[in-house]
Length: 270
Image (tube, helix red, strand yellow):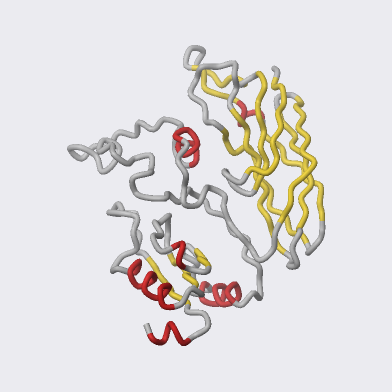
């Protein structure tokens, strides 16, 4: 670790191996890469971790490192893209496509062998609609990183929320501003709450729409995101048909499923 102490910014590249032919045994990095990252970070707090992983992992060393760049599986130009991101030639704008759990014991399948790894070579997918961020919201479980999370070299502010309904479709309007000193992209996300008019299982909030926007430093832009009527419906098991979830529906806008910066509501009617 002497070299790690001498350099200004150590960079540790870590990876996992994934395949469609086998389940992952756990959410840890293989071959004690977690131990390597932790040791380097102990030697130098400016450590940056670059992850080449195909899915969520646990990060027991997260509080020790300066930054984490998750490239997933970036492909043939991954090395060039990683270098440009690390040196600041381009501004990162990616968002997590799944929830990263805080631990292996805080996931939708933890503690239920029927869900995973299965019993007698059979698995029971009993989560119903509560998969991904929907389970974390229902159980009020704090994730390591929520669905839709992602930082960049600039910052964004949200304001002036307005929501209206027309023919079952919602139009969500708001203003997004780049409040930092770098040009950058933001993915604004709209989440819609449950209908009080049905007893069918519903998520606390569901992703209704999103929009990726490029803004120059200091630039503001008025956005309108449509939430299709289908996103507001539930399956009625009695009539065997999709029905509109009417009543007061709460609406949130933000940069992830947990970073919800604007909150409002609308009356949904047929």
